[in-house]
Amino acid sequence: MKKYKSFLWLLVAIIAFSACNNNEDYSEPPVEGEPVLTLKSQISSAMFGDSLSFAVNATDAKFPLSTLKAQLFFGENKVSETVIRTKTNGDYSGKIFIPYLANIPNGSATLKLVLQNTHFAVTEQEVSVQLVRPDYDQLTLVTADGKEYSMARTGLYQYKVTGDFPQKVKAYIKTPKASAQGNVITFGWGNGAITQGTVSPITFSNATAGTYDITFNTMTYVGSPFIKLLFGGTEMTMVDDNNYKVEKDLTTGQLLEVSGFSNFDQWWIDSDFFSKDASGKLKFLPLSGKYRITANFKYNYFIVERMTGNNLATLADDLSGAVWVIGTDIGKPSLANEVGWNTDKALCMAAIAPGKYQITVVAGKGTAGNVNPDGINFKFFHQKGWGGEFGEGTITSNSTDIVVIAGGGNLALATGKKLTAGKTYLFTLDVTGGKKAAVLTVTEK
Image: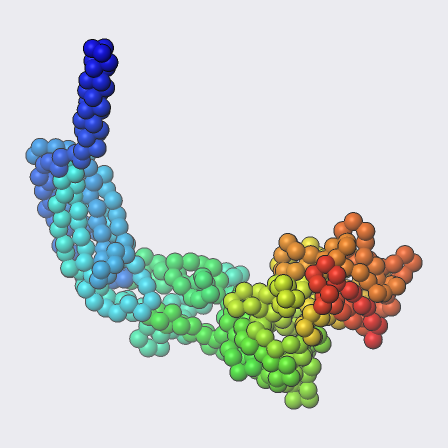
């Protein structure tokens, strides 16, 4: 019994000792010392885009110093920071960048200097800085081929250059240094808009090539010209140099007016989705729903993709949504833009009735058609990407010319068969029997 009691007392002592050690391990270190910060430079005003210089004397009589931070605040927001290591007492100097941002008016900012020693003691000092947006005498437009054009000041923050330009001009804009502490500010394209701090080219675009103005405002970042493309009364937004898009609800039979396209009479119109009348209006043909329409200027055609909410549609369990085509020997508007096995280029079939989808193709090579008359190798998918698909056992073909290849479900021409160059073929996929019982019909028109 004595041995048992002795063991219990020993266990209690070990637990108590461990608890004491844990308390010591997690205690916060003491804050000690008295860092002293003295500003030695005169700071009262600066320009947006400046590298603002500062100089201080930093000391602590008891403990070594650690860091000096210079922080710039626009209101409550910290917009810039510089950190300097300060091991010993003495004088320190540095620079902090004053951001050049859109739509920020002249006003007061706060420069906060924070000195800390190795024992976590901190002292702070704040200085009010009056900031002014520079109004440059001129800007420079730099094109992708290295040519430079002077943009004259035409008003407060407003600049313009007039020249004989191609229909599209890829360029960025740069400023001169506004002061001895100033920096060259560049304006380029980023996140779908003109922004500062990049030389990624902006694609200015006019209705036609010739003499026209390129303008830019250094306060609002508004530039011109940009083609204003309207599709069904809605302005299309720029995706990249060659693509503009709009996402909107469309109804079967709806007439859509298209404007802003200088060569619209030369555009290829996808007969699965639209018919075009004599006035140039497009009649929408598939089932009503939300669609993404992308105007592609490389090949002069509209990419039409069905949507569900804010995402591209997939083939739903109720067989609504979309079916997509991926593979070789097919493309729109021609085989010059072949899909291949690049899922980003998957073709959306037109939904013509609940559970029925179609794609119309013309046999021909290169730009003469959009399906290879000598051989095909593509298949149908449930989404624009890998995943659900119509493979062997889930799709049958009613055509004697188009067969489903065993083992994969890819479509191919039957042995000894070819498509007739110049002829139009309608591929219709009927999934009303379910995702595992699709039926393909191919009709020569």
